[in-house]
Structure formats: structure tokens, C-alpha cells
Length: 317
Image (cartoon, rainbow, N blue to C red):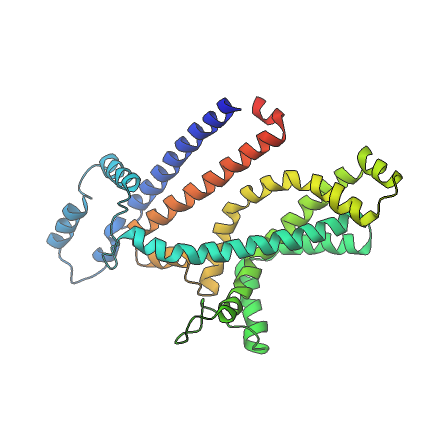
């Protein structure tokens, strides 16, 4: 097991380096490069561009720039924003918790509803409820996140007026937990909508495999109630493989958060990335990509380790 973990750690570090190298190279190959925001300004002279290149170290070879950037990231110096010269790590830290709040709530919604729907579909296999959950899962996977978000705003904010259309809290008012929850409901539900489909299908498949095992038949023969059999014996054994699914869905959460935060003007890292892209603020973009890559690789690594603990056959591959 130790050799397996060490091997996966080495692979994760190599993957992180490759991801950051590719992202760093693509940003510098983009039209205008990191200084595009300045070159588009007609009042900026060529001498000013050359001076900025020297100040930012952009006149050096690309591999030296990457080595300097990577060294700073490891030491905690993520550079400064081209937009307002603020430290990049401070800017990202101020937005990070909003994204975690949104992603964590969306994942909780997806897990609770997905497990319930999947379990119901497994218990009542080939019933109307099972068919409805299958059709609903296909629809959820087919609907674009941005369209669903706009429709949710139109219905619940514009037409019914039940929930706010965007933001994290009401401007000009003191902090209120109720107000924060009202702003969180729509974006978290939209972000978790697609994940509900995945959780329900995995739960249904896992439950169908478990409830057909011999120990379930023995439990029924002993006269245990069906509710106790499903919850205590069936669901508990079916949730093992689903723990791995939670780690695999982290990339989907961050990818969906970028769209969801833009639609609902949620002040998280996804919204910050879109704003930085519009302003060609490459240090902030690279900081977000680096942090996202670290989180995705870390959760995937944890999922692989949990899978190896649950199923020893995984360590053999």
C-alpha cells in the first residue's frame, strides 16, 4: 500500500508540473501575450512596453520565466495583479471561500438527492419512479448549465420574486444568515443539478448489485423490516464505491462553478477567472489555474487511495 501511495504521489507531482507548464506556455503564446492589455492602449509607446517587459521579466526566455514563477508559487509569492498591483494570493484568497461555499453546498445537494433518488429507483426497479428518475437524469445531463441558470433566474427571481437573482448578499445590508442562504439557493441548486443525475445513476447501480447479494436474502429470512434491510445492510454497503465518486466530481464542480458564478454574479474564483480573462490579468489566471489543479489532483489522489483501501485489486494495476 505504501508503494502504491508513493507512486501515485510522484505521478500527481509530475501531472501538476505538466499542467502548469502547458497553461503557462499557452498564456504567453496568446495574441499580445501577458502585456496585451497595455499594447491595446494607443497612448502606450513602444519604449513603455519594453520597460514593462523588463520589469515583469518577460524579456527572458520562457523556461526561465516559468522557473521563476514556479519558484515563487512554492514559496508563497504568487506575483502581483496586472490590473491593480495587488498580491495575487490575497486576491484569490478573498474569493476562494465563496467558491468553496457554493461548491460544497452543491455537492451536498447532489449527494442527498442523488442517493435518495438512486435508492428509490433500485428498490422500485422498472417502476414509474425508476423510469422518471432515469429520464430526469438524462435531461439533467443534457441541459446546459448557463441556460438552466438563466431559466431559474427568470422563474424564481423575475416572475415569482422569491429569490434574489445574483450576488452573495444584499448590498448595503448587514450580514444575515437568512439573506446569505437566499442568495445561495439558486446557484447551488443549478450547480448541483447535473451532479444529482450522476449520483442517482451510480447509487442505483450500486444498490442493485448489493440488494441481490446473499446476505440481503439472509436478512429478509430473519424477518428484519425492509426499511432496516435497505438502510442498515443495503445502503451502507452500497455507499463504499460512491466515496470515490465524490473525489472524481471535484473537477466538475470547479468547471461548473465558472459558468454558475458568471450567471449569478457570485463573487468566487470562477467569476474572478472570467474577469481576469477579460482584463488579460495573467498572474491571477495562473494563480487560479494552479490552485484548481492542486485541488483537483489532490482529491483524485484521495479517491484513488480510498479505492485501493476498499478494493486491494486496484493496487495491482
